[in-house]
Amino acid sequence: MPNPTLQSVHVNTPLTNISIAYQQSADKFVAHKVFPNVPVAKQSDRYYTYDQYDWNRSEAQLRAPGAESAGGGYRLNNTSTYYAAVNAIHKDVDDQIRANADPVLNMDRDATEYITHQLLLKRERDWATSFFQQGTWTGSTTGADIATGQLANGDWDQANSTPTVDIAVQSASIMARTGFWPNTLVLTPSVYNALKNNDDIVDRIKYTQKGIVGEDLMASVLGLDKVLVTWAVQTTSNEQAAADTMGTIVGSTGTSAQQDCFLCYAAPQPSLLKPSAGYTFVWSGYTGAQDGMRISRFRMDQLRADRVEGELAYDQQLIAADLGCYFIGIIT
Image (tube, rainbow, N blue to C red; front, side, top):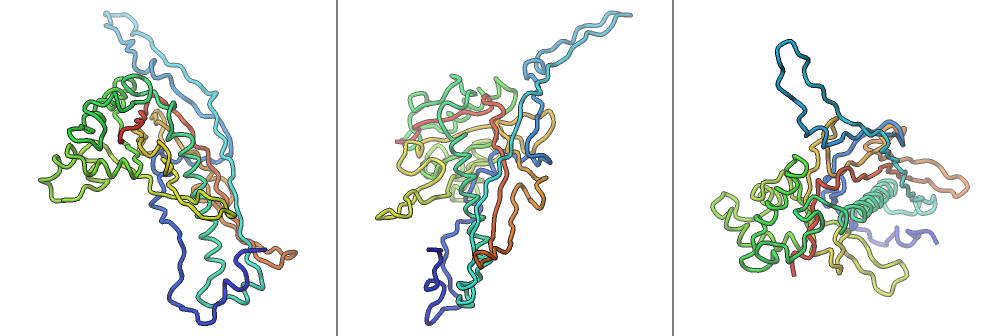
């Protein structure tokens, strides 16, 4: 049976100024904010990576009168590739349902917002699975994930803990390994709530004009460009479940990842000769696409319906594992 049904789009006394949809704001999603988007004309291609050690090894020498200057060079790798796979979903608007719908319902608008939301959920899940996880990042002092026992003064939700010190230590490690100071911290809601009530953070801002620790102010205290909180949620139960359940997408509710966070250097914008922990290649060359997304509406005569279809073409790529550090279990 197609959803929505005839009965669900028509009520006897509609309230034309009220309709309820649980559509999350796009601001709640972080996948498109952590790493810069790289618009690409082709769905797949190669890209160059430079050898960081060649760039940071000085070959310059004193030059004697009449002598040639010292020569140098760097290695290039052109074997790295991306493939912007197309994710797609559609929603059919049936003629009978459209004809019977009350004026308060805009079936085409609602279908467009629904499929757009579905694609954002998919992109967020893909990012969480690939990057917000253990065993991916190598920029820490140990070259591996930082656990609670490696924090200077204990878990960040405990008295006397010093998250500013812990983040600064790992930032310095990434800087020493790569030459780039981290600029982005991704927090689960649980870790964010612990940090904004942490005395180490609060004591540093209590004399500023703002009395409430928000994401921007926290970033300033930590010496970062941005702090991102993974607020976006998803339905975790299937449609036939006896009871529906919800949970956060990144750092899933009910899992140990709720206690984790991720620190990295992400290039402010894509650029030649500028590394980044990751890049998201978006297929802007796909006809009609904007930032890799395109929405189409076309007739399905055999179904006696209009189809609204959404597509989102991207490839989220790990570029430099040593530009990131992953903290595990840093709250209790």
